[in-house]
Length: 543
Image (tube, rainbow, N blue to C red; front, side, top):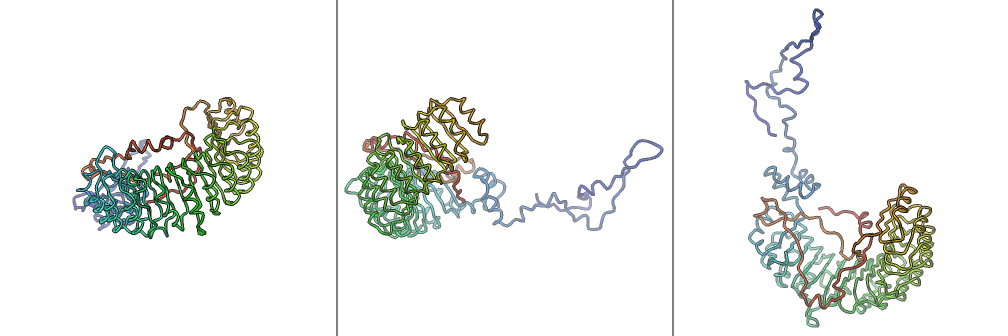
């Protein structure tokens, strides 16, 4: 791709047009053949210094900033290949990479200087260690903090050798941290308190299976710290003593999203304390397999800006608590309820939702025995309803589907799973729901494949996903806080040349932890069909 000097004896470089000049077509009258007659071109004096257009290396003239922009729009695999082209591309690719995922084994320590000398612009870092290996220790984390003082996101998975001391020293060097995700680590409240005190711009905190908070009453509470003024999202998963985060939840004045998932203990008291705060600004609340009753739902109803509510397998919640939410949370847009077939949530509260929450756009009912009464109220009073899922209900039959077809005119996506509907109910969809673009029919034995084909024929623009005998485990919780980060996993230095990716896995649970959780530690049984539909409209993050 470079330019080579020309010598007097070398033939001149010709363009395609010039290359045709030495020859001309001659058609003689005395013969019918066409002959090529050589004709020497008249070269200019400086022609020897000219270079063919095909030999000019335009890439070399590109500034590093432009080359970095090109790399950032490539996939991780393509970026790896580009870094092998030449030394300049290797340097630019490393300096322009903002996301990095490392296999956080103990042998990573000696390679940290070399890795972060190449990737010196990393702002989003993930450290994962396999449960069968020894993870990096405090020394490695502190060394990383010296090399990556501009970190804004940190994810730790299975780093069991880290302690409160290491986390505290790390937080003093990376004070610009905005997102922190912890999973299967062994440090406790002291380390998290250090993060909250030193990282004054922290916005998102996600904690899962933190082993250092399993000592019951001896656990130190998680104090608000300076981060309480900026926190916007708190997600707690599978914690034995999650109530130690209560002071932080109560003091977070700008908290917008709260997710409590499979955390033991009574959470009504914490939610009541949040209710007493007049500056409450919660917009999204997820409660999955936690001990929450109507008292907690009544406390949540004080969040007048609430738009998204997930109640998944909370058997102590009933019509009374949900009616309280409906009466005060007028801005509700998305409601997911997994009633666990307890029959404590029924038409009564759903009618209240329909009458009070006219902005409802997405409704998921799993194990909830709703009937024509509530579905008709929802169809008539919620003109913006676009996504509806009805799963595992014994009362959703042909009459209910016909009611939906007649009243839900704005409906775009419908999912029916494990309900006693038949071909007659599906036939109503051909005449109703004029805006319907997708329908899923799963495990409905009364619906035949012939009806699904007929429905496709009648409405050519309708996507029909039909399977009456699907053996799948359905999960409606949507409990994972967002999608995984699209990061490129970089192995230790000795593996960089081989181009191998480092595997990532989370740490296993301790036996006593599984025993304490019992039923709460099991896998979910029913799934939200809108997991993919909802994410389809979400904006993707950029590096």
